[in-house]
Image 1: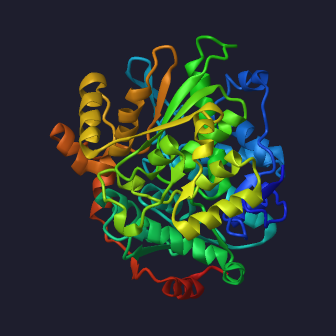
Image 2: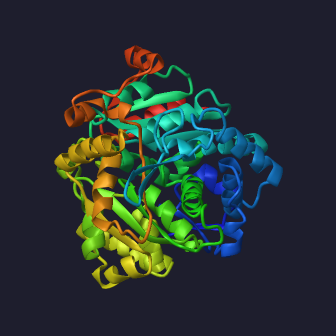
Image 3: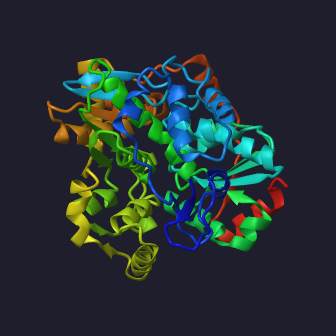
Length: 471
């Protein structure tokens, strides 16, 4: 399997190559030359597999330049004892024909662990094989940062430089990241919003001289390796939904709280591979640029100043990087059309794809909805009262939007994003009490925090990385 850029300026590369690169050298995003289509019999043959074994099969479709026994060791280590549930991904019924897919069983209590624990094994493996080093540069609006840092802390040949927006994450999220003391972890707090952090990451990744001199890579969702690992739990969800009817091809619907569009694009990959998903329902919060796009076909990212701070802060994103991958597919995987479209977006601040709008639902099965703070409180309270399940505010956005699309004929899965302990203030507002914290989590909240503060200035960031990069 070979990989190319959405913008056409990258020579075909292997999966091992793109694990280290992240962003394509021409500023585009990496995509496979073709999305493999699986026979239904192949998917059915995976029914009895454990989660690590299923990960080996799904990821192995894309990572073809690794010995099978090495991939098996990587996924076994990635989905081992650090996950609380023996199943790795349990499911919980929260309503009629509605299930929560519990993706927050990992070490940082967020769905990002599902891919990051894989990358934390896969990337050091490739570096060791090649005798190379990597400096991971990323931006986080909350959970990506802690998941990446916990996955790569103290790993050989790797350093992590993680940018986060000042004052835009919960106290729990900050503690999970900033309390780490590993020498290869650098928490850089930027006086701005997530989109400012993400812009700086893309700018340095676009400076090929600096990128190569400092061996920069990324584990944000612009790294295709993350999206491939996230495909696995869509297959897991469908297999569990049809366990009582083996051989069935009945579809499921999946609602995905979405900020940077990576998690839901993983579902699109799984769907295009042949997994019976009828609809992928995108849920946004008040920063509803993506909802506007799916309803109108017009994509108009907002400025950093117009990005609203909400009670589901990990979704406070107005320019979703991974949307480029879907637009690439909508435009027929034509890099010339894609480059023209994004040049128009850069020039005008808006991209009108309304002539393709009907295809988003008809060909790609994608629909959307938005949620408010009041909706989140209601969803948290009702899910607790009706199902005795406590959810976080981002998952609550998903539960809210899922209700508008629920169909008794098709099971609906809502992807959990994080444990409610990470967003205690909103939970208290919804149900009148905070989630219980273990002694370990209470200790974490009290630890000293270690950060480096920078202005929204790419030159300052450049100097800091050059001084602290692992060589």
